[in-house]
Length: 292
Image 1 (tube, rainbow, N blue to C red):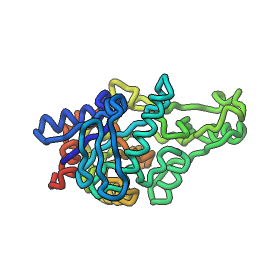
Image 2 (cartoon, one colour; image 1 turned 90 degrees about the vertical axis):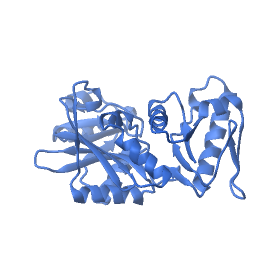
Image 3 (cartoon, rainbow, N blue to C red; image 1 turned 180 degrees about the vertical axis):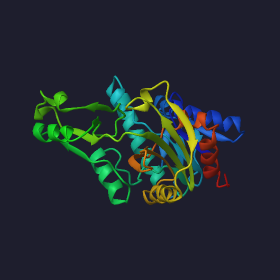
C-alpha cells in the first residue's frame, strides 16, 4: 500500500495524488489538517508499531510519500498549536522507525536548512560551489560584493527570492541586522534535476531574470546531465539517506556545472507538468518497488 501524508491544499501534494489517480495507482491520501481537527491519531514506536491517523490504519511495512508540515506557528490558539506539534513530532518519530519505504525519512542527513553549512558540505562532497560569505561585519560584506557580482540569499532553508546586491546596498548596514548570506553570482543557464532512486529528470532553464522562478517568460527544455555528474548526484542523494531530491545547478558557457543546493522535499509539480509527468512516474515506481 502507498500512503501519501501531507496537506491536500498544498499544490505538490495535490499534484501527486491527482497523477496517481490518473494512472489508477491506489494511494491512500491522509490530510494532516483533518487529522489535527479530528484529534484522532495513535502512533506506537517499538513493539507492533501500530498506527492510526484520522481513521486511517497505517501499515508499518507500506510505502510513504511525505510532505509533512508543522503548522503550529500559524495557529490562533494554543490548543491547536499543541495538537500540530504533538502530531508532527509523533509522526516523524514513527516514520523514522518503521521498516517500510519512506520518501523521505525525517531523519535524513540534510543540512539544507543552513545555507552556509549546506554549501560547505556540497563542496566537501566534490561539487563545484560558488564562493560565499555569511556574517554581520559591514566591512567584510561590502568587500565581498566589491569583488564581483553578488547574490543575497536566505541564510536558512526558508524559500526566498535571490537578488543581486552591491556595496551601495550595504552602505547603511548595521551588524545588528545580520547575519547576511552572500554568494558569488554565476551567470549562465539554470538546471533543475530531480533524482528519484537511480533516475534523473533534468530541465535546462533559459531566463533573463536573476531568479528564474520570478520570470513568466523563462524557457524550459528537457536535458540530460553529463554522465559523471548524473552518477554523482544519484550517489550523493543516497549517501544523504534520500531517495527523492531536487538539485539546482548553474551551467556556464564553458560547460561548467556549479551546484547551488539539493532540496530534500522538492516542490516538483511545476517541473513535472512540463516533463509530461515523468517525475511522478518514477516516484510511483519507486514507491511500488517496480521498474520505472
